[in-house]
Length: 382
Image (tube, rainbow, N blue to C red; front, top):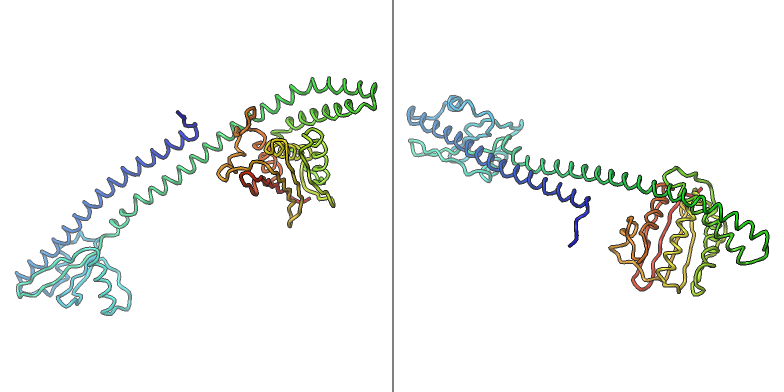
């Protein structure tokens, strides 16, 4: 059974809480709106009965100013009184434009009729008057209130979820930083011993190819320790020739890969980017190793460098197994790996180095299952 992560549990709790609050709010608001509608209808009925009563008593219905005063508490419901022909006799709580004509009143009455069926007043002389009315402004606002509240709740859920994510991210960053510093510290002492031994061996056997390569590997370990020590601190970004860095990385990797792996790279003219030599080298090394693993030790890896406006672009293309579309962003998440002994840290650190330290971008440009993948790095031109 799959257990939800703390992040997903938190999101699920927020959603349930939001839906509960929204349901309760909408239910009681709609109930209150219905009650208010009935109350407004009763007000209009009272007004209509007042009109009918005065007409019976006086035999005429001319002093409509008095009729409107009967229901003095109606200060919110827009009302229009008309005769049988639709001629307006009086109105209340309605702001009319300066110029009114029969077409304007006809449209207004049609809108009122669409909202509420008009109340019929049968007068003693056999004629009829009609009472048209709109919902009050308060009632109209109440209809929108639950949806506005839902939007506000959703907004605050978004803020809460973002804040929670940032807090978790900060906690993870502290763990990464601690692990990186401790790794650099643990590598320091044995690396120093290996460097001393390597120097002694190179003095005794200066022309031995194995000793020369061993010395390179020891220096590589020193570089790796230096990389870990830089995690968490602001690296110095210099103007470096990325073509030279790529060449050095490929030269080192090609001697430690199967002979069935071919690297294609044409350096051409120097291309300078604003970067940290050690950290960018780490990213390139990681991507090249992943490409070798994806091809199971056989295939061609092509590296292409170009410039575009103020950016330097590095594309690394392999002939590996490819990456599914839905996983092309997930592979940069810490802990994601398809290797049996992998930790899922390489691409996560690569993304951190490129995007946080270099203000650049790294992503899967293209990938096709069974054909290969192309990773792209974008850096600022120096």
